[in-house]
Image (cartoon, rainbow, N blue to C red):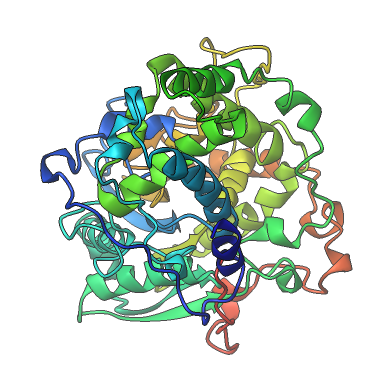
Length: 468
């Protein structure tokens, strides 16, 4: 049975789906009650606001006027990927075969006619919607997240769109990213004519992409594996040992324990809550979050010097849009991509790079500002704001509804950076980087620069959608 399921997981979307019969109805009193755990789930769970609140309003300061905004958003809440789905099914079937008798302790709920949250393998990789979730009152669907975000966007930046009601929205060629962008557009309403420009995330896109890491053959996720692998997995061994002791003969491994965290996160996306989340102690959640921070830091963030060049591809385009903004008719720019690309982008900006490297010998509590799950939950959104106060312009960033001042340039109104100082700052962050050369992009593409923000009117951007 398990081998057949795994085979289905690896086939195309057009194949017949696996259907798992539903069990009892969900306990509606539990739906939407686990928000306190979301910051510990490696960004796999539903959207939440950035956890560090400096008390700075995200609106323009008194006496200032917003003049330009750029949004780079992550796709909304989704089902697991096919590769992760395979791992979750392995763990699920190990447990479900055991619970033919009964289960005890923190997994006792599995004996109570429990329904595994992946009912249809065709949903793997996809955004969650009211049509594919397990309970219609689940508040965490990717579709509704995108639509709510769009309405909030209008409330905050609608004035910038009054004189430009026809505009492009950009997305990568990932189906879930595309669907997020389309739901966002739909919720903007009939007053706007937004065209969705689908930018390829295949390696052949080269520099003309929102997903630059895919076009970077020089990048290797294992480059600093000696650092990340040195982090102790005692917390995982503790989880598996505890569950095995409570249920003699269960034989869960550390890998199974690790999978339970993803099970918890993605089940919340689909069901609205997850009993599996109650398996973990607070200490285990902190360890899991920190290991995710550590992995992201040394694979996608400041701990990997090459990422400075990867993120520069998008930052360079962002700066160019800012410099053109005073004379450009379009004042609001919207792009959608993956969490990895946003992390790369923020790394080059330097939002969470204080020069303190994450320590793999144990959880770093002091001077640690790098929390990946806070930065890129499902539906994450990074805004670049430009506003004018008197005759001067200023720039700042808003991440997941919270203003994040630049560490070395925040003495403007609302803890912003004066525009010319910002241009100098951005140049210093990109100094010495060359995405095309540093990433050896010539191995996969001849596209040397990002052009889609400027040539979309004369170039067809309608890349084939990918289930990834």
